[in-house]
Structure formats: C-alpha cells, structure tokens
Image (tube, rainbow, N blue to C red; front, side, top):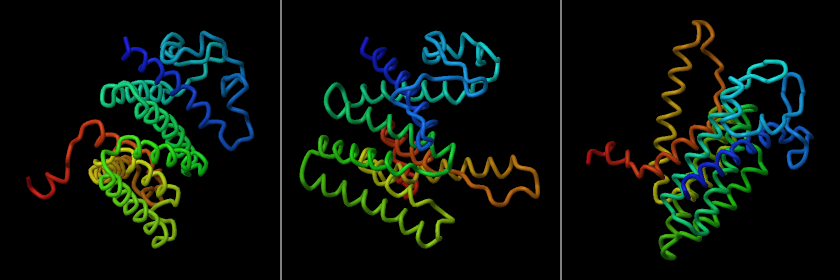
Length: 250
C-alpha cells in the first residue's frame, strides 16, 4: 500500500515538475494558472491531468487538435514514481525520505530545464543544494563521516568549477558545479561511483549521437550534462554498485 502511495505521489509530482520546468523564467505562473495544450492552447480538464493514464487513453495526442503530446512527460512521471518507491524502500519512513523526495523533485525540474535550454536554473540549483545539505546532516552517523562527506563533495564540486574555468565554458557549464556538489552530498558515500557512472553514461550517449549524425554534421554538438549527472549518481545510490572496484581490479 505504501509503495503504491509513493508511486502515485511521484507520478503526480513528476507531472507538476514538467509544468514548472516549462514555465520557469518565462513570466508564466506555475503555482496558479491552468495547464493547456501547447499547440491549440486549450485548457486541460481532469481527463487530461491523470498521470500516465491520460496520455495512454488519448493515445499520446491532444483531444482537441490531435497534436502529439511528447512521451517525455510520461517518462518523467514514471521515472519519479520509480524513484520515490526506491527511496521509500531504501530509507524507510522518516525525515530523510521526505528530504530525499523533495530533492528528487527539484532535480527533475533542473534536468527538464537543462534538456530544454541547456542551462541550469540557478534558483533551483540552490534549492537542491540546500536540501542535500539537510539530507547529509540527517543521515550522518558521526562528525568524522559528515566531514568526509563534505570534503569529497566539495572536491567534486570544485573540480567541475575548475573544468568550467579552464575550458572557458566549452567543456562544462558553471551550473553543473552546484548540481554535482548537491548530488555528491545526497548519495554519499557513493559520490565517487556516481561521478564515474555519470561520465560513462555521458560518453556512451555522446558516441551514439556522433554515430547517428550525418557525416559533416558532427561538430559543435552541445549536450546538457546534468541529466547524465542525475542518472549516474542515482544509479550509484540505489544500486550501491562500485565501479571503482572494477577499475582497480578487485
């Protein structure tokens, strides 16, 4: 019953996160204001606002103009539903679970915004960082463990900031640094594994994009990195896989 509750909650918040990411920094209100079709501007009714099921029942199209509704919305709802369930199974009921779910919700907004604009919204990144600090304080077992968590996270965040500065923004965006710092605090002690996973996933996707593009159009590819950070760090946290062991041979 609790798993169903968190799955439903995650799907609902995932739907809301899509609205926030779409309206953020556009001047549109996301707290109020009815959702509407991006093609015909029809206000959506209750039938259109049920996570996942509305998309399936309408066959992925607007009921009025029959424009396609991107599958991304459904993927976000299902992904956050799964992440909420995994968080519940991993952490159990308590304040760490509440903070983790809040952080995952903000992270979803950041990922969607980065996919759309290839930039990290500063306000959302700061909220994620604040939530990650609170989470680290809640789950820390000792002062020394907390210090090590902040040290490793700080090194990772500083590394991203230096990569931005040294490359003059060509290799990495400045907004990636606070997100990497926040995720490192959130998934400790799996931060290093998460970092490695992130670069592996990013490299794999980059290769696929290069191979799939026509010859002569393979230069100047701009790919947002925050989605890879999210996938890599959360994969390390929920699986506890240690790729570092494979690298050094044990």
